[in-house]
Length: 127
Image (cartoon, rainbow, N blue to C red):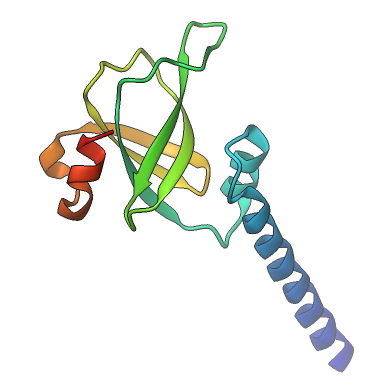
């Protein structure tokens, strides 16, 4: 019984270490690997970030759907680079609320400036 408890504790410890290491590795990356790791990592929480549209897409897929690289502002006021695949071209000077889990974009929606938290409104509007 003691061996089983030790084994469970060791496995849990290894999983926590791997999750922490994955979080550190993906914190400064916006590539596909970082997105996959963050999607699967249980230590990464879902949160929101905001951006003003107006940049050109960085690429388009076979169906002409654009991918954008946005420098967003998260709910704490920190900058975060996120790659967002749009269903269509975004109109300039509109605002997006991007729900993400680390670098993995869960969803996005267009919002008005008044829907952005007051503490972030000025910074987002100046983007």
